[in-house]
Image (cartoon, rainbow, N blue to C red):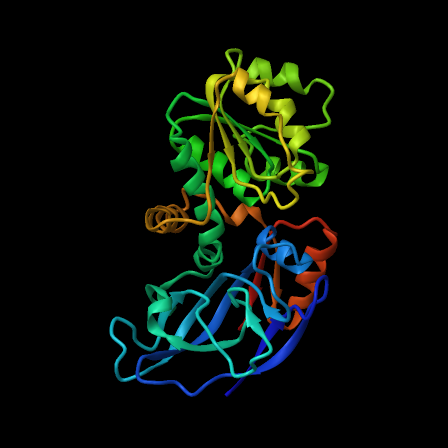
Length: 332
């Protein structure tokens, strides 16, 4: 069976290729893709060739919802028509590797690589779009869990991207008081319009520090970084209260360029926490938040494209223009 997939043949290049799927075995499922979502962080770093373990040519992506079209005789717990989340796959072209491999039209793989959400026909399209971002939103959930955010705390989030904004939303759901800082005027305007209850300030505002001190006169309990700019971290660490928490969730590939001022962290006796990936509880909690609408991912989606135009999405990812945040690809 042939299918189409997005392939990064080398750094900073992307194309659509035809791949050959293996014949399904007794333990395999055949899944047709419904929706994929482009990760504005991980997939950009893979495209640049900087993400740990990146190899070319590769099929990128880890956000994928599909419908089961066939099950092997030994498969249990799944049936044709089920909505599943996962990028488990494989193909016969040995020169193409998988960097999670979500952006593909069909897949054949063992059934254990999927989470199921019942009949696909019962899931509203808007909920599918939000659910497609489960892993990325789960990173935010993982961070809020690791930071042990509590009601009444003041939290400062660097970056109004999906991870930063979803973390702020989750902090607010816990009764904390979040504020976000970002540099991009278009992004600030976009998220401020969709979420007026969460303040978003410009890092370039000459009155930023006074504004933040008005917001948290006694200092912030948490400084959360999802961007990876050490100068910004160093600048805002000064606003964290003594024995507060610094949560690092960005990508830090360049050891020298990403060095932060440890003396300022030490002086304040801050606890530094990091995360990598998500855990089972993040899957469950994030899925519940997205399906209930408590976590508003819909308002962070800037573009919806059919699969026939998927390369336009990767061009936007590559150049950053026009402004984009959440990008959903409809494979139907």
